[in-house]
Image (cartoon, rainbow, N blue to C red; front, side):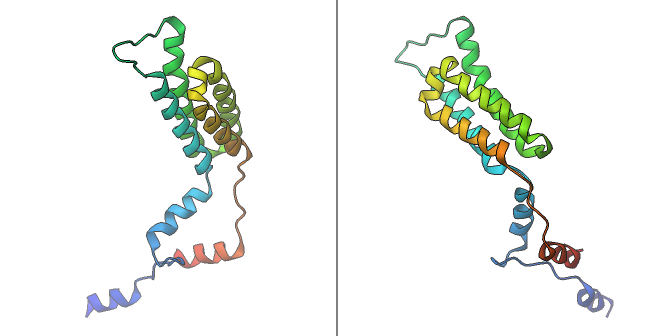
Length: 148
């Protein structure tokens, strides 16, 4: 008898249009962050890293500061992308630094990862800078009140 009372009093989980409550949590989390821009920055950093690590047969040459740049610039872009997603309050700072680093990669890392990585980094940086948190609508407030 006690078990049946608990089941009847259990609150219902809010359902989204897709009918899944798990995706609504991720969707709400991702709307509060520059997720697309951060993902583009991470992809550009990965692409630049692998373009700087190319071997031609047994020939692999990295000299001095150029070899360091081919490692530091992609890692910096990945870090900036992750930080932009995890700490959206500083998105403008991270986006501007990512834009500068992506443009500098044209000189420092194999023409910016053969231009593809530089373009992805610039687009990602622009999206991170231009991102604005969404407004909370009445419908969202009602859903949150029903969920709690």
